[in-house]
Length: 205
Image (cartoon, rainbow, N blue to C red; front, side, top):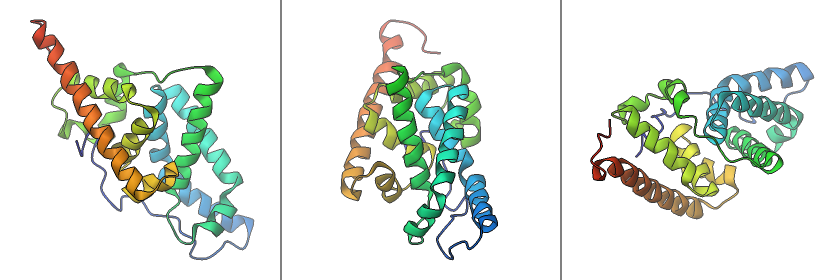
């Protein structure tokens, strides 16, 4: 399950830390550009797994960085040198929640586009075939919101437990329990979905 959404290596992108507070707007903009380049893919991937289609994912990504820019200077001051990725993902998380609340939508399972988003994350290293990938993506959408959120952050973005806890506003211990339960539930859903065609006498491929 570790590579469920694709393996992400530690240290793949630089962190924007509060080493020295920017003194001018030009310096602030330069720091934000660094943040944007480092985490654009993270925010977009998270948004895509939340909403299930590229158009709305692009919209949520744009809104996330616009809101982040408005509060970036304060975030730098308050970060105390900690990575800002959890802060960004929390913004995306809140915007996605508002997206569904305002439009009364449920996440779409954009199965036909699965290859586009999975390719950069080398999902094929775990998923043997397209049917298994379909089962995984469908299963994720069946999870309760908090469990789905935690799995996306852990496996799609490669966030550790502490980062996820910050993004979700939970304790480290509660986050560990949440992830464990989410993985167990998803394993059960995927196993059941894959087994159904075999029980029906149909070829799962």
